[in-house]
Amino acid sequence: MILVGVDGSRAALEAVGWAVQEARLRRTGLRVVHVMPAWPLEMAEDGPHADVGRWMRDGAESTLTEALERVRAEGGDVEVESALLPGDPREVLTEAAGQAQLLVVGSHGLGGFRGMLLGSIALGVSGHTSCPVAVVRRTPAQPRGEVVVGVDGSPAGADAVAFAFAEASARGAVLRAVHAWNRPIVGGGPFALADAEKTAQEERRVLAEALAGWGERYPDVKVVERLEYGHPVDMLRDASTEADLLVVGSRGRGDLTGLMLGSVSHSLLHHAACPMVVVPSKARHG
Image (cartoon, rainbow, N blue to C red):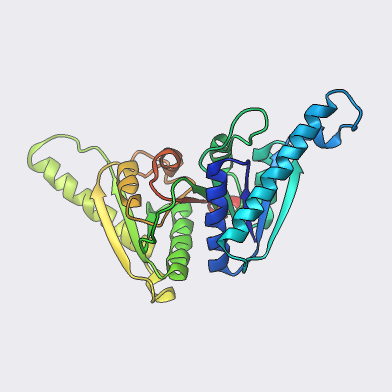
């Protein structure tokens, strides 16, 4: 099952549309949820501020209705259910995602009193759920036939590679594996050149080891490798402009030579040019 959070914003409806297509690829169902404060759902009809509570409940129901209409507009072959859930959106979605294959949210929301604030939700749930989180920022007008994955050799990066191969296979897309590093070169002259070449060889090994064995499991997936010296955010952002999907791990090796995908994924949530999936490490979630 794919879980998608909505708040009535245009970004949330785009997330619904994307989630429908993803559910179709996976041949699974879709659960559309809206999260709101508990008190409007619990208050008495004749209690203080009852009119405010009714307004909020009516707005929540309208949000779910609009989302279900978007599901139907995308095609009626996906099984869908909806739910109105009480509580803090980040906590509720994180808990609900425990039963999902994938959590989908928009890149930003309505804000204000009734909105889910999906911008903060995207940041709040990415890397904290037991399942991958898709943040739908922009959807290409036409399929580009390419999935991009950030590779850094970390456990979280390995899970991202696994997810990306499966996505590329399901979509019939090319997989572009991007590995970038920006380790500083100390000194100058021939020593600097030798150090740079040694570093490049080490990074080629990291990329090769990260991709080893996956070609045998997914022989239908064409892999294009991109290995460059530069900042990972810049490399992945540029690659996302030609992709249908960008996949990254929730965090990287965490040292000065690694991608540090915690900060990289955070930056790309704001700058990726296509939908992006943050894949948590299975080791962290057991």
